[in-house]
Image (cartoon, rainbow, N blue to C red; front, side, top):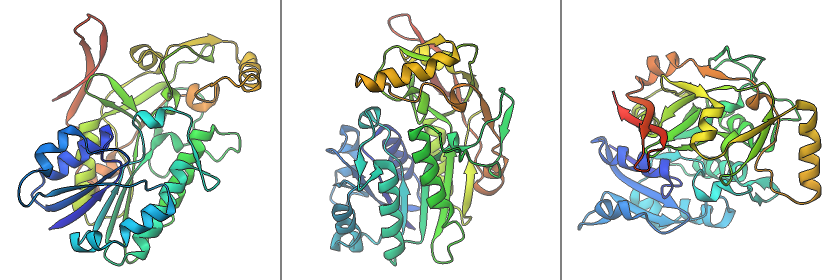
Length: 336
């Protein structure tokens, strides 16, 4: 039996992962950690005389709260042997990423979680979600990426993607750790019920108009939140360490995703993008993202054969269009 800690369990993908783990008979107990109060959907998990799910409000991006949690009596009594790290992706992640100890919050949190896992002798497994946008993209939409493809180490890469790359390399460095099994799941754009999308650096920030390079509409690989949760459960129960691509079977143009999330982008000539970004910074306007870059020009799909072979992962959801109550079309997930 396994006792699991799940980070950012109060956010959408975290809640989905907790639910999937709760229904896994191999999981004895779950310590759900979040920044805010426990989600209302957790009421059925937290009730009873001996609940399998416990909730703790901790900011894991800060050294003292993270250390206190991993070295607390409650953590030891819970006999946590597995940590599932879900990076921040909810409402707070839509704002400009805060800086913690001179690092982007995502990077600082990754370092602290890994450090505490290594220092805590009881942790035998670490499963983390990463981003498929870390790969270097070449011109066109024909990029078919496997786990051995090189990362985008260009010094001019967008800051949000740079943070994902830094986290990826941190976990990559521990994949062959002899004491603790490390699994990194690289996911593309995650689609949840209701048409919400996460982990796409082109769609971060509040809804509203944006700009993009004229003549480009990159293909975006998709995966449902339920398939991500299934992949996490499979990784927790697996005995294999390593890096694995996780994706569904569908892919759509970025313009489609932008339109259905009310983040449409005005196409303008490429040479003007630099002037736009510089001008926005000069007046202090929020640009949400780099206005240009490979991820906004070139598309990709993911080879998931390694995850199928070693984690027994196959996507079980179909992602398509559905008509909302107001008649508008939006992305929706449904079991095959």
